[in-house]
Image: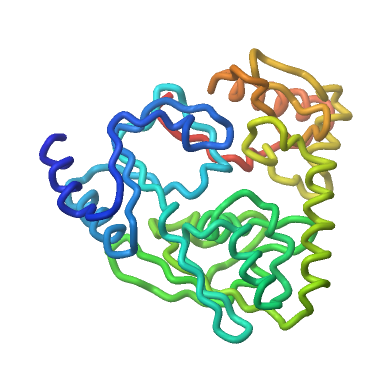
Length: 301
């Protein structure tokens, strides 16, 4: 490990390196034990060199955006976490925005607003990064990333850089081809339309007011806990199963929106995991519907 740390220090001219870093500091759930290594590259060159080093040394690694869709074990993550928060460059070319994977969706939405580009308002309140949003085809109030993504630059498993078209991304509900491959999103091209500043701003404010009104933003969570089952709404099923407000330890089904599990202050990984499993069991028994987690569960069990 000492040799790896030395090599990382040589690569990271401006980036940061943390040893045994608690992941609860880097996830919106505020849950998670230490990652052996947490690396925050400052730019694309450092990112590619870090990935090359880890692959060459056979060190497992996980790519982290904003940590908004994650539940991490208290035992932490063996290997490394690469956090993309510094890779946030955004360029505007006519009606197109080109952004790095670590750019927050809210930041991209504000850039679109300033340049009077419409079509990205739906993402302005999603608390994630572009890379994560592309990987899971994130969406809100109807539109999804597939509606605005023109193409995506990825690093494949062999270290080659590919450009994938919208069609090649195989977008579907909360899914993209990235989930099937050993690929990493580097950049995305977003195709938007010319609009008026006031109209775009008004739409963003409307959607964000809806979000504040309907979602438990005052508590740590990982967003919607479950994917929407075909023909149903997860939150409605959970509520109708009598589970609104149900809790295990510090994990609780939100009384504001039953589709969210919240951390009331001291929830553990297993509090959340046991609550997820309990919800799945009760909903399956009552309605015959399988609820599939939307959040990603990682770390040493």
